[in-house]
Structure formats: structure tokens, C-alpha cells
Length: 211
Image (cartoon, rainbow, N blue to C red; front, side, top):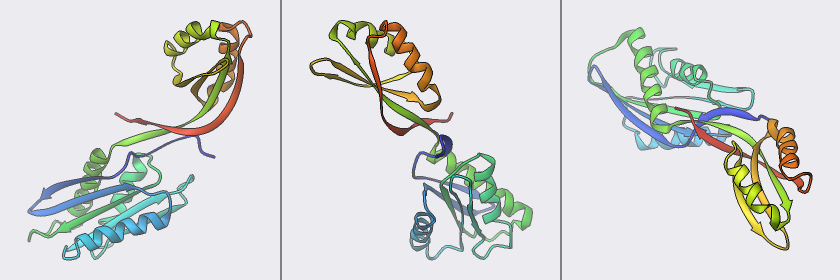
């Protein structure tokens, strides 16, 4: 299972005009090829009268699904540069569609490659790139006498305090990067003088916007 990877936060759209042609970019997260195809078809239906609806997507832990479609533009001038933008930024599970309304001025092969690449980059800025990091959700079970100290230590640390459950004792739920689990256990054991029961609850991804 992958642990940390880059993708888009979610849906985003942008528009640029180059030599009177309108380039409308639509981006979405797609975790399956079916998701990507459904998204592409939705945009094509939305802009059924556009000159071109070019697309690209990259999916899978090892990027094993990669597709690019020029939709009538000269071969290699639209879908491929769009896909290259996704690959260059190291993105996974991402689909992009660039809709072009021709403005009457031909751009040439090089001009098209630059235009579709720029349109894709602008779309990514609108969608926002995030890093998804796999965290382990840990439960610290302690007596109430330790609550103040442990809570303060966690809030002052890089760990994420998710919840405090008040029961017969206290359960503190904390998100910890998977690779930091061992050091987290040792740290909690040290600050509680071994009086805490530390258990793994589950795993989840937490997203951080990439600036």
C-alpha cells in the first residue's frame, strides 16, 4: 500500500486565451479509469460544440494507467503535453480535460504543445495539489492524573490530536505518520513513565496542500 503521494485536492477549472482561442481546463481526482472516463465524457457533453476536448489521465500506485487523447488536434500536440504536466509534477489519480474553442489563428505544433501544457498547469493551480500521507490512528489509554501532561505534550508536538474520550479512564486519539509509530510509542511511554496503554486503531490518509 502506498504511503505518501501527490494528487489534486479535487475539482478545479480555469481559462486562458491564446491567440484568440479559448482554452478551458477541467481537473478532477480519479482513482479508477472508469472515474476518469466518466469525467471526460461529462466535460465533452458540456462542451459538445467545442472545437476540441482533449484529455489525459494518470492512475494507479505505479502509474500503470496513462492515457492521452488529442481529440482531433495534430498527433502529440495536446493530450501528450497535458499528460507530461501531470507526470512532471509527480501526480497520481488525476484527470485533466482541456476544451478549446478555436479563435481563427493557427498556433502550429509547438504553439499547441505550449498552449495545452500551460492550460493544464493553470488548471492544477485552481484544483490545488495535495500530498496524501498515510497516518496511523493511535489510542493512548491513561488515568485522568496524566491527562493534562499528555494533552499538553501532544499539542506541542508534530503529532495530530484527533479526539479525547472521557470514560472510566481517558482515551486520547492521535494521528501519527506511519513511519513515526515506533518513535511515538517510545515518546509516550517516556512521558508517562510507562503508565500508558498504546494501541493501533486504524490507518487513514491525511491531506496537506502543497504550496
